[in-house]
Length: 470
Ligand code: AMP
Ligand code: ZN
Image (tube, rainbow, N blue to C red; front, side, top):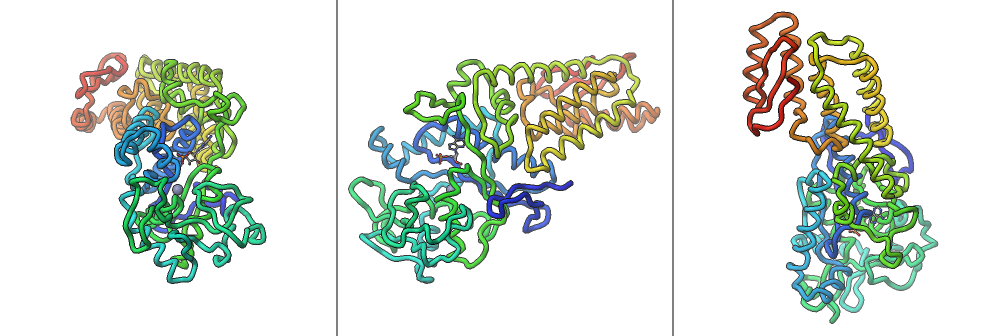
């Protein structure tokens, strides 16, 4: 099977076919840096991470762009609350955001464009829309005229007669029932205070939606492979992005739209008024780690609502202890006779794992495949000669799941595991020249290998750190 993804635009699973062979352009809607991210936002960022890591496992060279919305309505509201300049205020929440991402072991995007640094690109884009007659000006602001864009509503499945033909909406966020002309450029008002740009469109600031159209196309081209975000962004944010981008270029904007479902807390929608508003710190303060959170989240498919519970966190701890314990026993296994019964188990495990991810990133099934592998391997048993390939299997699954983190230093890179395995094979067929060559190569890669009566063992060199099986 090849990678299949559910495309919100076509409402079905499709084989992923990139524009350029072997490459994947990925734009994900990043945080609005107006507050610390909550655990619902984390679900979106973890879904993007799962997608990115799966694409990489499948051999694609990914170019991942995650923007930072550092000017919008919510930020301007927040500014007066904290009495900081726009730069100070957004820098504070940007730092907190990246700290959270690191704790969650979410891979950093290749580009993190900030809206305030791309205002020129937004003006250029709005000017293109103006030339096509898709905009109009009112009270110093520039609006997108939705009735002039025939495809308006195609992503969210709205019919044009649902649209209100009169009136405009100034706020960045609004409901489907309020759909009408939206602001591309917002003329300055007193509430904006010092947040203002002097541009060809007058004094003001960009609307939220134009930010993502301008930045995604600048970094990935006018048509790119994948755009992702939470389902709450389908309307109006992504609908408006399509209108702005396709309206200006006349080209399809995005080939595949991916949307994650929402996170609930103990069965309820998370909100400050309900008192169930949770941030990552609340979880870490109870002693959990990023890998526990990842395990808990990834047990639900990203298109299903995920119910966060403290019980679920406890279960994640227990399940990960089981996996760590298995890894330890593999490393401490004795005997140098490889167990051939492991061959089909490894093969089956890898196939089940890959097929799960290929099936629209079914991480729940991928985790189940990992557990099945562990119980199958336990059943047939393994020796120290089997350790490298079992480790390689675990490392490979963990390159996507990122759940075996606590003892990460002990995990071998794929290259190290492969070399160890090749060396084991050379030793077994008594090709000692090759075994010596590989031993030297492994030393360069930071592992010292020793042969003993009970089989080979390895030790990490550089960090003086953890030892392999002895
Ligand atoms: P924001 O910083 O509010 O713009 O949101 C950042 C990302 O988090 C967006 O992709 C949202 O769709 C997503 N998001 C917000 N709330 C939730 C939630 N409760 N569950 C899952 N994703 C969410
Ligand atoms: Zn966006």
